[in-house]
Image (cartoon, rainbow, N blue to C red):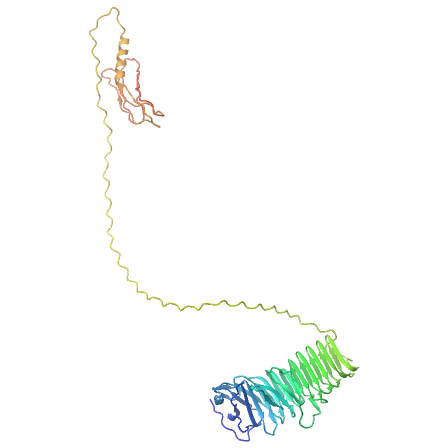
Length: 524
């Protein structure tokens, strides 16, 4: 970081009494601007203010800053209360200001006003970190609040030559003088020129211009654009307020948007001179408009005054409409081949740009409740190691099921010996002998009536196992059988079943029946 060292009285920047301190970093002058007022205006006065090829730095930083021209510089001690929004460099001496290099504002960007009633010449002037630049031969006027209200111009000339002025990095450039001579190129984004002795508003009412008394002899022309001169900007506005002092254009003036020029006297576009616009041209003169060159707009041209004259070598054209409002019109132009950049009649077509959609008003943002701070996470106790699983005793093999002894079949009911019939009485020979067959039949019926009974039950399907039936052949008598009758549906009364065997004298075979069956009689 370098300190700005004092420079000799032979230097180009000399502070006036009570003005700012001026130092130097390397070969670059560094101006420590004075403390700004309550409106942010730093009003600096100089006995002489010139800018050489090395440039000049205006220090608008309260702390150390980096400059493009001087490198690292120390902070400006005058700016403890804040940086300036407008910096005025006003010359109170008797010499013109020569702007032959760059003027840089270090630190906060600000508007710059260079004011010298003696006049200003520019040859290679440019500007760094300035929001707006005003070159004037007038005197800045502050209002009660300390703001720059207007600039009063009574005399002086701004002359641009050689390398001209490059204000293309600045949003707005103003040139205010009693007259302006342009013999080099002047480039800007938006350019305003005001000539004559007048009071021109500076702030929000920049279009307000009123006349004041002039100082000295009136100039021949208010704006003189020489053959080497040219103005190029997005929009150009020129206002000449001094009566009878006109405009001469031998160079080229070109606007991308609107070119608007007003003269208190006559206006003469000389041969080789051009007024062109990619959109509209508006010209107003107090006396006459003479065109020996080219006046051409791609859309509309509007002119008014007392007399209009367009000579044989001139072109006056518009791509859409031309309006010539003069009491006298002498037009001999638009002859021969159409020069480049001169639109033909009805050649204008509106750019096909989509209309921007209306922006819907933003919906009110619902009130957002402040986010509560997250509660601290409770300390987590370390997990205890899992207890070892108790050893599981192997399951004892199931004891074998005790062998179930097969159910022994029910023992047959002990044979009940049938009651032997009473022995017949000794045969008494009847008078008539009965048949043996008849006797046997009666005997068997008696026996079976006593011993052969079965019971039928209410069952569905098959009856229970039948009892065993067997016979006794040794006695040479029919066997006795016990069993259950056929299945029946319902619950009938128990009833005996009488079996009536055939009276056949043959041995009975024993039959044993187990299961779901009925006893059968077997005979031979």
